[in-house]
Amino acid sequence: MSLDNNNLSEEQSLHNIYLSALRRNKTRVAIHLQKGIKLCGEIEGYDAHIIALKDHEKTQIVFKHAISTIVPDDIYG
Image (cartoon, rainbow, N blue to C red):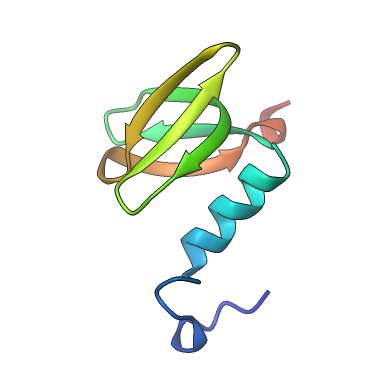
């Protein structure tokens, strides 16, 4: 995967490629919010403004502007 953003259209921006791979592979992720809160789960879906994060049977909506980082949760493991 190239990190050259000049060749990526808006539809294929780097964050969309990353989120799509995490969702498609059902990778458990840790989403760290700017306020220091850590949320864990699988990415169920996303759009330009939100990420739907599912943990067990509950789905929560996380606004992208509140996110600091998204990492695969298994790196803490």
